[in-house]
Each structure stands twice: as C-alpha cells, then as structure tokens.
Image (cartoon, rainbow, N blue to C red; front, side, top):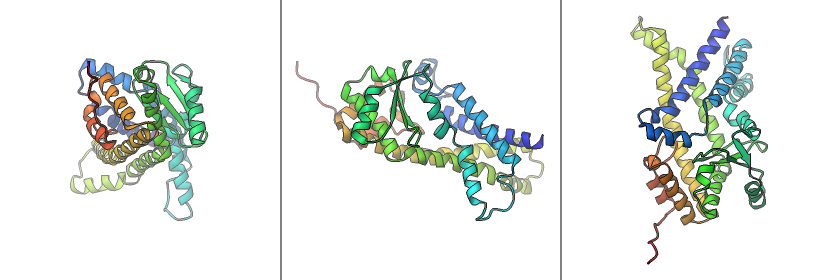
Length: 298
C-alpha cells in the first residue's frame, strides 16, 4: 500500500505540474477567447487522463521493483535511464501510435504523406483533423511513429502554397529532432521532481521544522514547474524559429508569412503576443524576413 500511495503522489504531482504549465496562460481569458483556444488546443481531457494512467502504472512498477532506489552507480545507470525514458514516454512514443488509429478525430492524408515521402525520402504520416482545429503539430520521433497533424479549420483558410508552408514547418520539427529535445526536457523535469524533492524538504525543515509536507509538495511542484517552463520555453521558441525557416525554404517567405498572418486572424490575434511555446507573430515574421506586399492597384 505504501508503494501504491507513493506512486500515486508522484504521478499526481507531475501531472498537475504539466497541466498547470499548459493551461496557466489561458486562465485569464474571456469566454469568447476561450472558444478560440479550444480550437487551437488539439489535446483533450481524455489524452491527459490516459497519459496520467500510463505514468502511474510505470511509476508504480518502478517503485515496486526499486528501479530508482539504492546507490547510483555506473552499473545501474542504463536501467535508471531506460526507466526514465519509459515512464515519460507516453506523448512521445505511445500517443503517436494511438493517433494513427484515432479515426474519430483524424483522417489520413495520402496526398501530403506521399509528397513528403517523395521529397524527403522519409516516412511521415500526415493526418487532417475532422473538426475545425486551427493549429498543426508534429509528434513522434521513431521511424514508425512520426506524425504530422494539420487542423482542418486552418487548412481551409490557406492557399495550396501556404498549406505546404505549414506542412514543411512541421517537417522542420522532425528534421531538427525537436521532439527528442522536448522529450528530454520532460525527462529532466521528472529527474528534478524525484531526485531533489527530499533534499528540498530537508532544507526547508532545517529552517522551518513545523512546515507542513503537503504545503511543501505544492511549493516544490511550483518551483519545478517554473524551471520546466523557462527551459522548455527557450528550447521551444528556438525550435519554432528554425521550423518557420524550414517552411519558408521549401515554399517561400511570402507563403510562410501569409500562413502566420492568417493564423493570427483566425485566432483574433490571440497568438500575436506569443506564448510559452511560441514567439510572437511579429518576431516570427522578422525571423523569415517577411515583407507585407502592397495591395494591388484597383
């Protein structure tokens, strides 16, 4: 029972950190803005629920078989590292395979998949959302689970060249191994939360012996969440700049820039200021040296 409760505490702590970091920027938006955010965010409560269950199951087994117990040595380092990768692998390894069979939400695009296969000699499965999502994203980094999801609501507002710019933007994330980088940032968060929690508790208790452990979990989780958000934001912004450049190189600066401007319009300029994961639209346009063309004379 002690092992079960320990695994549950660790799972809930990590899940709440990730959920808080993901949703915090949207907590203060108006009702109309929230309806747009729902079109931007593809992942649902069900996705996060399955991720939490997955995390709990493998955390429980890790605790049960004492993967992370005892003295750290070179001999047990491979097991420790493999355990970390498995425990944090849902959205990066498992979920891309789930998406391939999620016909309720996605429709396979043989046209775009074939285009990438011919031009890049790499197998990347491209799917279009069945709802009016106004976003696109890349996921998976194994050869068998590289996936790109294109929002139908966004694609319907773009020209063919602008669609390809968005497509190659997402390819850029695969090309630059961004998903692997994001994966290791999540693993780092897990290491910080697990390995430094007790030293943090001991340090606080040294100065404030009566400090409640429940409150300590909250403050420690917030601290780890802040560190995670800062590191992830820096890496993600850099990745977006490079992906925009990749999309522009394979189409044109004009197509990539126009696609970003239409995304801005579709979101009623919510994305203009940027976020933890994306730079501002102004900086992204400057990054690809986009210039607004003058309107044709009437």
